[in-house]
Image: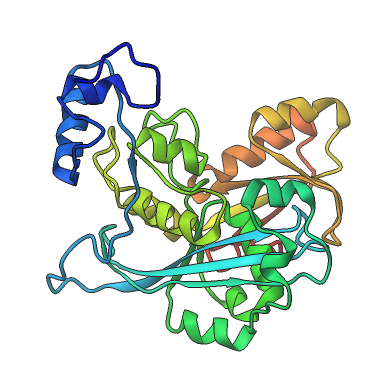
Length: 321
């Protein structure tokens, strides 16, 4: 018998269930151990994500093709930094937010023509040697996208701007953001980061590699959320279908910037060629309320002309709106 006091890596939890180092532990046994630990109320178990080929069997419901995308890059600026890894994972979904088949992925390295910053290699594990001479062809990307109806990314405002530089087809498609367009806080989640959502939903994956993040994103979208009882994808689609008004508060008084920030406005520094301004996107039914707020609380005059334009999922996150 193995003494519980013996030093070494063999866990006491295994001893609790009569497992020795020499004993073969199959999947069923491991699940039994995990279930007992969870039932005790003293443990939470994270299971490694195992990619699935489908989530629901086809039942005659009309479906459309979505593509979950993720990029790893040399930095954060889509104007000057470059993609070093691209992944796309297609999936079929219904209007009510169910995911059916998940198809073969597209995963490519891309040599940016300059050294990868050490901080990026430390985060992603992607080295200069791994990507030397690698390229991604825009025509191949366009063919892979095929008849996709929707592109999804976890932080689409980042991914879309990089990908539109790489392949023009991304500029013609509707986009949705699984980070910004699912009301995670309302559902009881304290963070919308991909790894945090995965942990809260009981699984883990090899993060900061593009294809693994895509698979994790699809898994998260498939889950039924605790408060609404709806899938994350259903909530995402509802948001993506709604047009928004992009309001730009140009020349807002500096001393009222904190008020704008608290209300959700973000600063645009003019690097896109337009005047510097505080921006926010609002739904159609609150447009007049938001304009009244700006005139009454920010500009404090009612004759000011405020820039407000309607945008849809085809422009959202692109930097062109």
